[in-house]
Amino acid sequence: MSSNIQISKTCISCGKEFTAYTLNTRYCSHNCNRKHYKQLKREEKIQEKLRQTEKPNPPNGIPIMIDNSVHLKPFLSIMEAAQLLGTSRRTIQRLIAKGSLKIGKIGSRSIIHRNEIDKLFQ
Ligand SMILES: [Zn+2]
Image 1: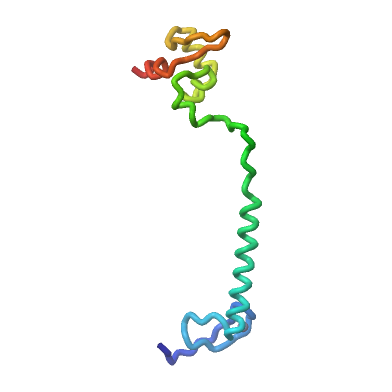
Image 2: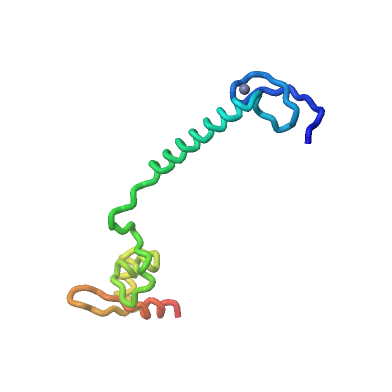
């Protein structure tokens, strides 16, 4: 697998010019190859460390805006119904006031059955 080509190249490790005998030679010596490889590995490690520290800490049990289980619940609060439909609470309350959306009451809490939301689209 030897060839007769001779290419003048610059070592990507030490920056010295050297004569390469294959197209993909990038180092003037095995030593430079090894040194550069080690350097790359080190930089890789640093990059990885950086990536890890960039990661935001997971919120400690604080739900962020939308609870993904909302669409699985049979009964929803007005807030959850709003999340499910991607509307504001006011919109839900308007629908209730218009009689388009039937609600149940548990004490002072308004509970909306999932079916009632589905009915909006029938
Ligand atoms: Zn070199």
